[in-house]
Length: 416
Image (cartoon, rainbow, N blue to C red; front, side, top):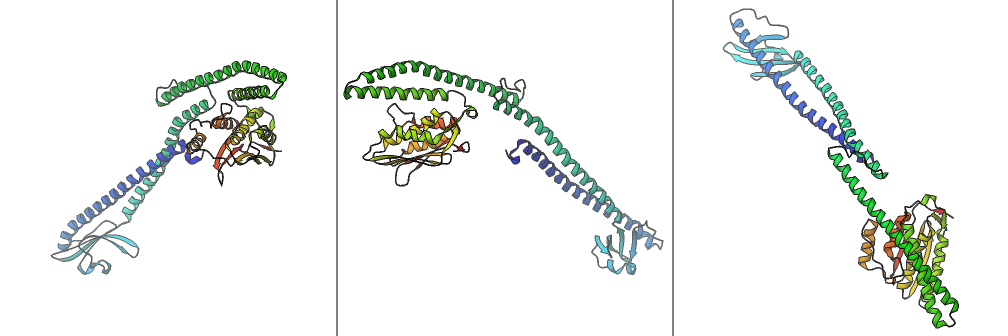
């Protein structure tokens, strides 16, 4: 899982983003408030100074003001402060910021000057406090987001690990919140699935075992008929009985293997190239020698850890279907590293079967068999065998008509 896909990371990002947005919102409000308060205080201070100084100056009294404040009348107004509009103005003189209240009365123009230094110090303190608050709030948001993420994600992770490992009963079922509801629902669903799979496995095993005995009897009787048959007319039906019973026994073996849990790592290596060559020779008689040729082209040999019966069933079924449905042309079986390719010049798959095959690769429904007259496994079971082996079944239309099936064993193969 990529870090960006982590639910814990997303929760922390949401908390931090919320902290940033909220901090910026308060920053704007604070800035407007500070500027507004400053302007209000400056205007009031300058107005009060003007109200106090104008009568004293008109009466000829000395106008003594605190440090930083100056009162000028008429020609005493510095040149840099003359010509300002009436009211409060911000002026920068020789790098010094000033607040200037300009006005005119009966005695002429006047100006009250105040230095900005005190207000700048106040602003610096206010904004410094806000920056500290902003950083602290972000750290708090990140810590709170991490805490909430752990409280939420860790139980989900624990539940996911328990489900993946097949633990029963699942944890967190005693909780009263949504996680408890989820844990109880998963436990009920897992129990139902486990019971269903057990029933299917037991049914497959029981049926297969029950069928083995009559098939053994049939094959034994067919062998006796073959041994005692004196003419070709009686031998052909016996051979057909024996062949059908033998193929049914192989199907049972495949079903029994599929009913077991795959433990491929413990199995010995089987040579896929040898199995493919053997299956081609086995079904060579099905190909019409006059109009259809069955050719094993071989390729780089490789082995996989898998039951030999399943590999033979998957490859053999593809070869047999190709022989049955190719009326003229050629059928070729070739090997590439980790792959078995069966190609024919037959009619190809119907559109609905191709769509079902594609959807089955993503967990879709079963693929209908192409009618192997009751003796074949069908493409759906080939796909199931591939899934059991960790392989994949691919299909594409052959250029010029026909089908091209590929069994890809992925990276789990050993070069011969």
